[in-house]
Length: 128
Image 1 (cartoon, rainbow, N blue to C red):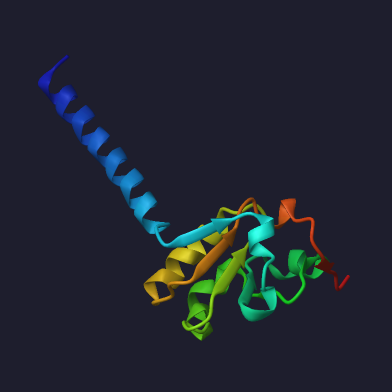
Image 2: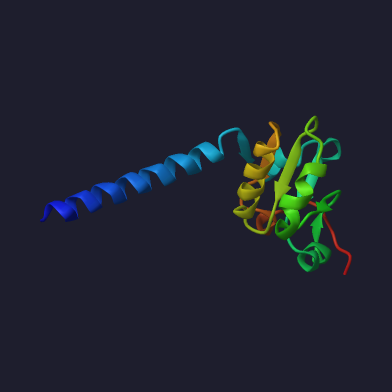
């Protein structure tokens, strides 16, 4: 192996390590919880459904407010920092991006529904 190849492999390994550490730090302080934990005291929190309007109308957790991820960055500042924010999406991935945005805005009490609404067995409100 040439010196150039070794240097490139070391740089690639460092980039991968940096990305992993960055991802882990970005979810630090975010509580990823199961349905049982998530469903406690939903009336006392800011419950946000991050899906688009049509899936939200098809069915959402009772009391959820729809703020699609496509507009979340612009609308996130309207959420109160003194109350917990509960986030969910279809499968649990998008909510982590939203949680990072909230952390940057000063939120510290953030919960994400593990596996999203796709595995939800609780009550659903449907407008269709």
